[in-house]
Image 1 (tube, rainbow, N blue to C red):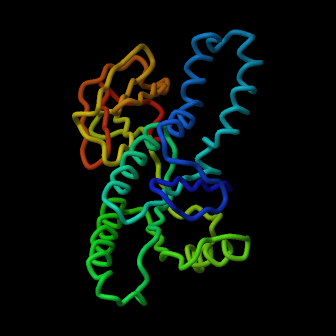
Image 2 (image 1 turned 30 degrees about the vertical axis):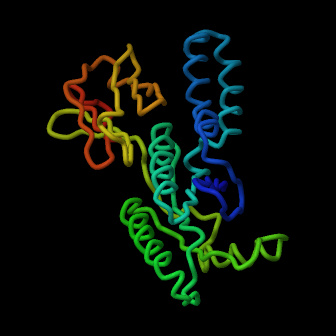
Length: 258
């Protein structure tokens, strides 16, 4: 199992795979979706050459850690307003491209042992921001870790710090099971649901092109290939509520819930 720690502020803890939460990182993580679209255009399904290209594409996307059964992302966030806002945007973009976030690490919290009055306001802000993290990212588990007294250098220091982050939890285990995209039937219609936590309606654009649903959030766009049961069905409605985009198609799917 692979767990990616994605930092959204200066400083942080590192274990397993790490990445900087920048625009370049998001573009990198969107690469499998981009590759799939180009391969479909160049080598449509049914051509013999596609039998050669498909295994290559599969290996590339596996390399970039897109398998939701084996890979998840953990956001590392400091208790600072700007960093929390960045983490929210990162969570939205990760969900857009189908990456599963299974935990949030609230990092660099002031220890309770710090009792100097000079830090009182700082500690109060940390508590306020921690509450915003826990409420905003629910139901994701929030792992709390205090600010280290010294720079973390060496395996022993990192191993001890990792123990304080995870406690009795298995760092390799999946800490939260979500489903960014699903199709289900209700009231005689078929709905495609896409998790877009913290997405703003003003930043969202939705379109349709042949057998693809085009979803844009801010500067990033994903082309969602529709299942066979929906490719010929027109879209009759779409809503964005509480971080979930629901696209309603006319008629019912024949293959049931997915």
